[in-house]
Length: 263
Figure (tube, helix red, strand yellow):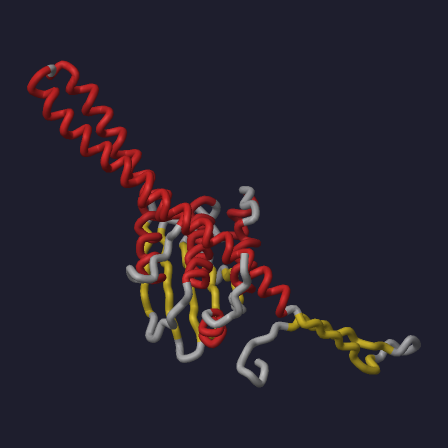
């Protein structure tokens, strides 16, 4: 932390300096590089991606979703008229209405997936609660959300989205690769830290991944964790797996005041 209160990031390495004859350690060669600007640029790239996803989600919900809803209302009026004049066409129209209703629901789900966290409507806890419900519906398992936060900081939308995506990827891996039947998403805070955990009762993530092809999901989770200044741990204490993200609250608060770049 600098004197002005801002955070700067460094990558350091320490290499033992050994005696060429005895091999004894005579000293340590230390190097340190300031990577603050690089991290800010990487964060801005993620911010741009998140903003575009939120924009697409908003356009889909407010544009396409509203137009489809209007079309559904017109079909209901037409359905009433046909039931009086040409009732033989009513079954076909009913099928069209059902298909349109399904399309509206799919559109809303896609829009919610592009912009999963709404800070004005419950923020991250509410988004994780919806994720648990959606996970149960999609994978046919029991997924619950436990909110154990005491003083959740005012996260910006970018940080909240990072946390949501980490939980989303962890639940997906547990369902697809670990073959879990029960999942728990927990968000908790202490006086200094925020923790996000996803625990399952599956066969173990390492065993599950050995049978499948997880792709870039785990690497992206770890990258998101690093960008927030946190750590991501994968633990297999026995049956099942626990994915645990931990980050100092100070860094999450600092993220709200990081400099903004023009896209």
